[in-house]
Amino acid sequence: MPQVSADTYVAVPPDAARTLADSLPAPRLRVPPHVRNLHSSWRFRAEGDGTRAIHVISYAAGLGLLATLAHEPTQWVLRRQAAGCVERLAEAAHSRRKAGSA
Image (cartoon, rainbow, N blue to C red):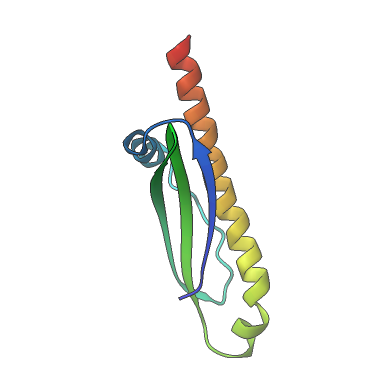
């Protein structure tokens, strides 16, 4: 199953990053018509004083020529959406830290 991912560093512990990600609204992913199955998930890895947050989108495309021709554009579209998810998480983590230090 092909997948795309995007990651970012957030300056909160992994448990806090997971809780924060769970509190964000679920992304409304724009799915190309030839994509038949889609799974979106988070992974968190401790890194220094914070967390490496990775958003992964796995998908299955229909069979045939369209899926073959559309592979690269599909990767690009879904990767941009994964990047948007990690950007929202990074903004939320930054806001949380800023509010905590005020």
